[in-house]
Image (cartoon, rainbow, N blue to C red; front, side):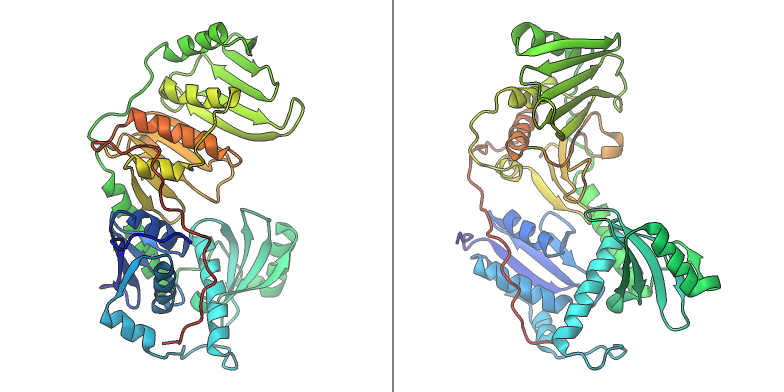
Length: 427
């Protein structure tokens, strides 16, 4: 099992404004590896060296202790402040818990499920259609939008919210909900509880902080000039006979690879920064299903387009590094957000976003510090090859050089899969 150097340090302390939330402060050359692991455990970035844990079940000290134990197993140096340690060691129970027959561990299992439901709603994976008050509890009907589509009835709030029924169709779930709760049914989700509002505010502050970290790039992002894409397309046909030209309309040219498994469509009319100039797709053989695709806007630098097409034509032997390792080695700044992680060049000119639950936009690469006003954008769907991503990140790192010359082939720490969470005494 790989271990982090001893100078990678994580300090856990109680959140100063949200009890019993927890703040983690990271330092050392492999701190980004620790931050990546903490993000997987539900922590969110509040700055270059800090992360926050805010949970709907208010059991942050327990989960902070688990995170600390896991990081120690990976070789990180971990400190827990005395105040947080007191919270970890203190036994507790919910005074209004509706299942008094449950053990402490069973309470945590129910609360952990409520936390997952809360996160799914907050991050848009679970959409609430209707809610009602049954006289004692808040109930709702909702649908999952990612993964296996499920339509569910929800019961309760905060740490005791549960899924009580599952349906195959939205219509069936909604009809049964209306039958059960009749005139009490109201559109959309119920108003946020006080605790939900507090947590949303903390996470909103996280998002604001993360945006401020990359505000005002020192340099303007590189963009393709007028005619550069046209010249690149012509050179592709002139110098690479394995690509065949097909032009069904005057405004569109299609390049088909000799394997018949790759197709690139170029729109000659694309001019605005938000116009899609290229659509590239790879298929499972000449008549197979589409494996993945990417859309590329008009201002995208030609080297990035060339990297994608070159890989699809003749994938080079890669060093088994993933895109995160390449960006880490190039000195790009990582940040965790509620729904995605991001890496930003030191000069702020290029950003990679990785929304892990998105299908159509699993990776987004854009020029500038704000996706809404990006100078250019590359959007890659789920299924894109990790080696292609690694090459694309390396090409982007060349376009946005860092002050320090970090070799792109440097080997970054790879954490092993998350270990089973140990049971610890309750507070």
